[in-house]
Image (cartoon, rainbow, N blue to C red; front, side):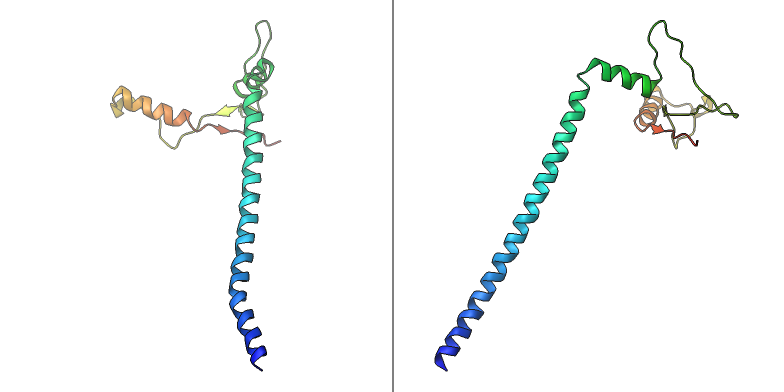
Length: 128
């Protein structure tokens, strides 16, 4: 009987330690997975950044995002029946109303409004 009580006491005393050990192992596994995820994200961002060193990629982005054409080329824009452009491109939209002469703003206030509008371009998606 004494031996049984001793075994039960040992199991109870080591049970808490084992629970702590398993919890720590789980936390370590979760942290390792987060590290691997972050490293993959960093590698992806570095590859995106490295693409900008390629002049052909920069030209392609300028053509796609800004609608630029090379000297000697003729640029075309397809429009729908209302005259709105169809396809990609960046359209600046702002929740602020346009500045009028009646607003009588200082030049730095107009500049700040222009910068906040340009800071959040909205890409138009074709409906077709």
